Image 1 (tube, rainbow, N blue to C red):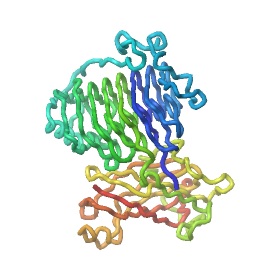
Image 2 (cartoon, rainbow, N blue to C red):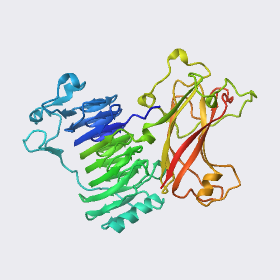
Image 3 (cartoon, rainbow, N blue to C red):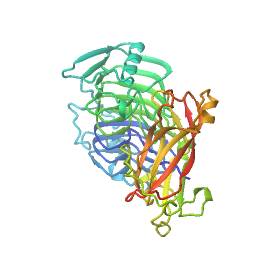
Image 4 (tube, rainbow, N blue to C red):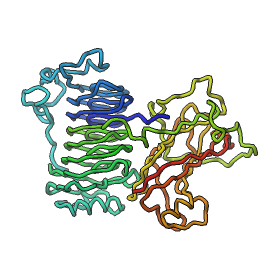
Length: 476
């Protein structure tokens, strides 16, 4: 059993896009296996003129700037504490003492128009806002109260918001400690438009990352969309998929935003954005990122190396199904994505223990599902060492339905079915469908089951007996 490895960054958990002229001062905390960086947990994109004073604990796979650096970083620096030693940091060459952070050393920074400097070292350096949103918009909606903000969020999540709309915040809004449903719950219902904070603050709200896979004020910001001039002060609790106070996942542009947050450690967690695939510029973050190791539903995954290790007969497989039946082509799952390097950072089998009939999978033991969109993180993954792909079907039993007052004449009802997930790919977030009568699972705790059917990815022959795994699920 193993957990998924977290990416924790003082500014962003995972960057595959572009970030420029940004800074952060956060404190990070994570488990020994977390990938942590003072600015970026993992960078696969590009960073330019970024500065971090975040404190990273001396454990795990960490870096002063990035925990893992597979992208580019130009004129980017981290500020080291006096007690830190060069042998402990692989990116020591990118570090500066606080008193060394001045205009001479930061020669690539524009201190006339973008950055300001009070002459106090790194603690006196920051970025200017670059003004309000400009351009032609088909519609302008002003938001000046809590009620208007809630109405805006509901319209986006209901699919009623028109792209090309400018939403302008006209006052600070205090949500008084209430729970918040992110704007743009998932990639299929992302926010599209322009949200101009006008320098105002939205504060004092709590987002449950266990309930929402993309946790933040915004869940997902879509391509060709902008969030700018906004200040956010919040708490993100629980452990989920992507979490950041401004947004969980950004595919658009975030500009001139400031975040102060206490954020628990989801899979991708940042002081401003959980995962960035778009552009972020002139933003600052502070607060606390991470809260130790992931709780059991992330920390516990079920790894079955079928045919590779001695396991109970229940999980035994054969090279082919007894009937030698050839199945019709199985459609590849369109939502499957390539596994990341640490998705398989578990006890993998030795090469000589893997045969051409090995079938393996990894998944979470527990899942939290939101009644807003019935999405949850199942963590379905087919390791690269497997020589078989699989189709996963999530089911609920008639007994489980009876407990919540729903009668069913079917032993099982299917709530989700993947396409073929081939070796080296996985599906993180799944959405549970409706029951046979058109209703949805009411809030409660369920022991769903996941039926796994293994296939030869070249011949589509069913290459193993079915395997059924329990999936403890909370709907709330």
